[in-house]
Image (cartoon, rainbow, N blue to C red; front, top):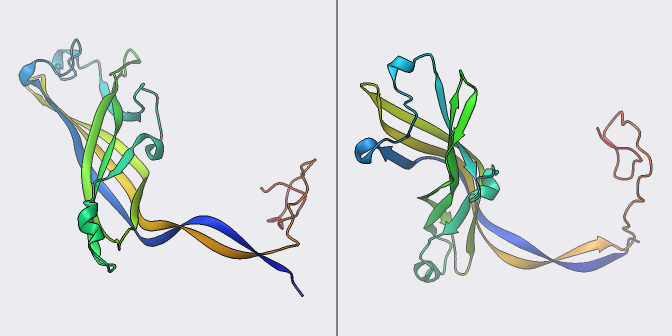
Length: 212
């Protein structure tokens, strides 16, 4: 007869889950107060031999490149007083704020020189609907994000520069819970692998090789 023991673990009990992709304008620069980009005119026809490429990149506050899941902070702005008055699992409008930093890179394809701005902060708000009953919290994770730069030239002068973000994120509602599970008393970790040899097929949990 198999011997089982009861163990308690802490886990996030998922209640509702959705995934969404948004496209947002996060910054817009105009030349009303002076040149948008000083000392470089990317719209000057007389310098057509110089071709400029403008890109935007997600960074941390110090200007270091960073992944979207780490570089974009998500804050739940939902009115919890209103939410907690609901005793049933009705759909609730969830408001989320996304914030982070980016830089704009200007690459000259002739000189191969890249100019980089200082980090610029951004934020935007989006909303979705989730089943959020009483005392259930909301969490979100950014899966992927891409920044794009759009420029407008009028009579050889840069008049506007816009920065857009396309972000894919998941939103969860749930609760941290203690879950009881039954495990085998005989369950033991496998021994450490001292040598490595190629695997010809997917190994079993205790195979003495590394896949693939």
